[in-house]
Image (cartoon, rainbow, N blue to C red; front, side, top):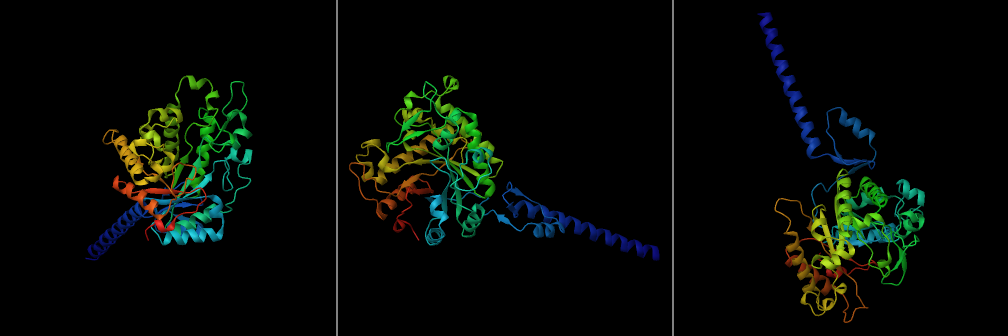
Length: 408
């Protein structure tokens, strides 16, 4: 009897033990898989399983845990803000308050700007070598990103790709050249002569991607490439892009860079977007000039962001007499054309979501033009929605936005 009684107790204990172990394992697995996603001190974002006992060790050993709120895509309604704007405590507070009280939910922030300068203290070897962070205005990028995320703001890192006069001057071997081997300086619309780096050079690719990876490591949820194209400046026709340019077209190179960059960055768990000329949507000539193939790039990107500023289209474009005076008409036509283009990608294959840039500035140099106020901002947004799209970003280089044009 005593033996039977003891055996009974042993069986009960074994059953309880199995139940406890199974419960802990299931809990740990599901919790780690579905709920705990974070980036510790800028390391690669990962899913981490939590096991009883280990959880307390993790908690105590991690004084700085950056919780990722954006495992699912965000329907972006954003603005571009410069590194100088966000490095100011007062301006940063203003914009956080503004975003909290309007429909805005995202900020596009310069990480590598149009001059080739990086906005925070980068550890990328080439950046340190050429000192492209020497004037970095953002002293604590992780702290800034934590503040944005605590306020529900989706952070997007803007990284200018091939327009990099600083790198071109510091490393002439990476610059676009004249036929005689000297650095080519093209004139922009402002009349300034600038050097660009050569899109055919793989070292340029890797430098840009290393900066982008670092932006992902410090906490950005999306990398957005700008000037991911060839220069259109006066004098570019004199360029010598090297031997590889005899084998690959401009479109080949930009599409290959896009594919390469996306594959590299997907290991970091971030979304990838790119800014493109609006005209390439329906102009094969413009597409070949700048190297941006709307459909091909969209096969790799998460988001493609056409710059459909009404002021940037010639009068009569798409049958719109004066685009700057008719923002709704021109944007609706272009975004409908965008969807038609993207629909040529085979069903079931990956395709980017179109997220246009909208104009929040007055183009006084355009004839005729109008002052852009809340009315013009709302007309542009309506055009986006009427094209069955949900996302947009406002652009004003001076960061003086028309808040009255935003919904509360």
